[in-house]
Image (cartoon, rainbow, N blue to C red; front, side, top):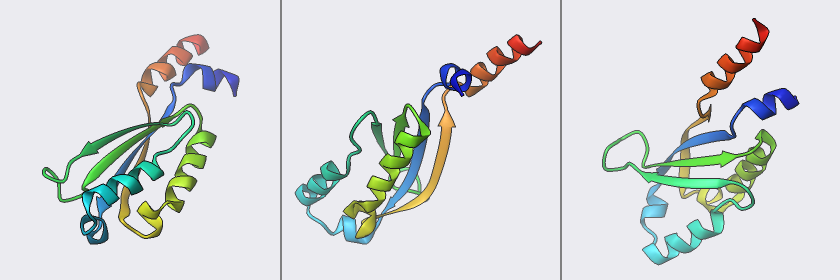
Length: 114
């Protein structure tokens, strides 16, 4: 377990989400207030990408990064309990887990096994 943790970078989730009409009907100041209340805390890093002008699949891509799967699980449970998804104002289109440059860590570990 320690070997795996030390050679892999943090876990990243790309959340493809779609804003629902209930979200778009809200005044922008109210949207900001709700969104601020939903931002994951702790060691979770969040980046947001607006893609509604370029894609019919989803309106936004949220990139969450955590040091462990457990921390990510906690963040996702809390996110699902916020009005963003409980109301709902957004829906999940896809959740894509990834490890940045994971192939490099794999190849480095394989050298040790040869």
